[in-house]
Image (cartoon, rainbow, N blue to C red; front, side, top):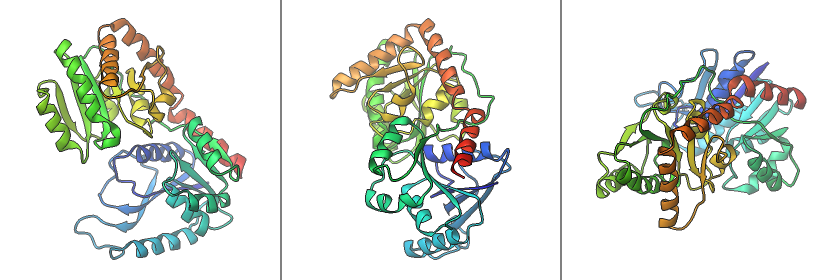
Length: 357
């Protein structure tokens, strides 16, 4: 069976890209799998992808390359329409509402079309109009499935299939380093500013612990300025981007997630795959789906201003001071991650496809 996965860009550093490439790799063990990237701006994807996965793109935007198309959104859309109309595949999985709408409009009728979705679309009207032409919507969590069922008024079949972690073995934390880690894009919605402010209290009371931030983004200058203003230059380290985030998480004893809303939770799952407990705000949809206080991590209630920062730093300090509890939560984290391994998730996708066909 030939399966095509369609991404806006398979070369970026996003949780949905990571999840999709993991899925492609898992499915490629038994099927002919290709990933189509609408736009290509790098020679290689930021995240690893299996050797049996075919990669191709519509627009080559790499520096110095001869572009397939001149600049312009209209021409890009025309190229996408042509590709979809002539797609020779058994299954098409899209990964953004905009791509799902185009697949519903232009892909062949006999092609099995599934929209892989994580959050609500910014513009719901086209989705409501065209998604009934798809065979299914697949969400990563039950909460997202409920959202999409309400949005589509029951006009489309909505299924829950979890995100896939890369195939094992995963690196394993020894839980003896005095390191707290966080990873992802440095953008406002990820809440790194409130993480740094909360860690100021931790650094004051436990100065031998360090915070490592992995990633990159538009907020870097502001976050560095905040670290400087709080005099945390010996406690907070900007580690930059890495395609092996799991390997870096394995060096930590706690992983934190302070996203304000709509986080995919892929970094949470990667941390758990390394046997590291996670501390997160319970208002963030992604972490709330995976983190269970007392089992694999700690969920901290969101509040106003300094209140939520005090609660978050208190949760961190309590876990820092209780090594036995950290190790107990680490065992729960590993158990959670096993349910998201490629070995478990791949067959769930295969069953969904078989049932729809």
